[in-house]
Length: 209
Image (cartoon, rainbow, N blue to C red):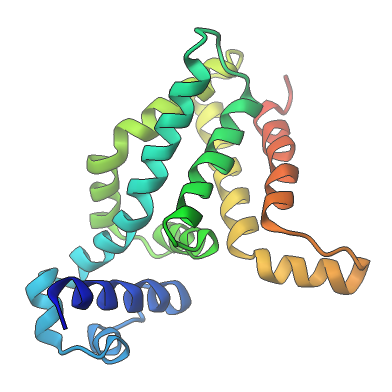
């Protein structure tokens, strides 16, 4: 087995297990057993469990932020201020579409993001801020410009309300879609859900304007 194959197997196993069980509940031995490698391989390629967690997020966040940046560049090329809906479409359509293109599961990414908040991982927050902080600040800055009437504290809360609704909806998509089919006879798809999410998230951000 080549080094690249070993790294991919470890990351694939860690990604699935972290999303299913959480970071604290998933041991390195469980990951190595699932990946079919020995514990020394994790220490050799990643150094520690913390660095493995960071590497799992890097596989999602690098294509996500790169595609989001390109989408924002395209939209601002005309020099006009962007509306809230345009920014959300860039986030949902551009960023999440990049994950599908990379073979990553957007729902799993959202579950991992949710866990990053509920199972506080200080090292992960520092890693994300250090590596991807510029991307976050750019998006948040453009969104703030599109909502000029909000004071900074209110904007902060509404941004996290929007992110929370997004993470819950997309990480729970399979269960929500199953309920829709059973209770309303209305199957849905991820693209359709994103179409519904844009105006709902925009309304949440604009509440009280």
